[in-house]
Amino acid sequence: MDAVIKFTSQSQGRDRIFRASQYACALSIYLLRNNPERKDLVKKLQSLEINMSAGRKLFRLGNTVNSIDAAKRTMQLSDRVLCLCLTVANINRALYFICDNVLWAKSVGLIHSIDKERWSLNASRWYFLSIVMSLTRDVYVVSQLMVQRERDKHFRQKMDQHLSQSPEIAEPVIPQLDAFLFLLLESLKSHPAVALDTLKNVCDLFIPLDRLGIYQTNAGVVGFCGLVSSLIGIITLAQPKLKLKP
Image (cartoon, rainbow, N blue to C red; front, side):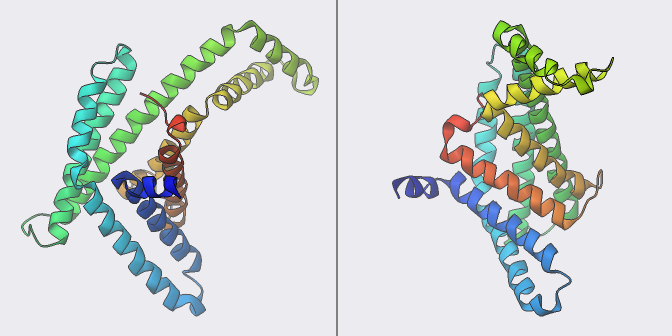
């Protein structure tokens, strides 16, 4: 109970619960859209989704400052690749939150003379760029882990044993692919924080891709990816050891 109270007392915790609920509603609406007996339920879910989205905008009002502060900290990282990826990601996230705050002000009537669609597209663009840079960081970290694992003598013996147990795929090219996949999976398995962060960012990527028309899917895919990403966010916030740092 103490853990639940501590989690819900944080603005990030409440935002992630609202986010999971929002995308769960979106997914449910998509799955029930062709069921005439569920029209009333669909309307209620649509209303709930809108309210959850509006509530999240309120929770995010102070996140611009947090992102700028995070960018200042990541600029001090000694690893230049991590420094570049995380700083650019945080700057883009700050720009996204600025657009998001303007859209919130528009929705409550504080601002009238803005193009809502234009600001919404700009928010999606900054969000997309921040996710791309976060994924680039993930790829870099995974590649570093793979290099470290490959240099480990015990792991090389384990990999050789794995390949020798699969003679049916011992063709001129396939062994290299099998060795790469084995190395990748073992590296992710031994570092769950990296695996979770990568999966979260991959799921998040589908949301702006669809919104910007770069790779359009449907509301079901967006809802499912958003829900998975939100659940991972809840897990990493509840269990800080599973959150990738820096």
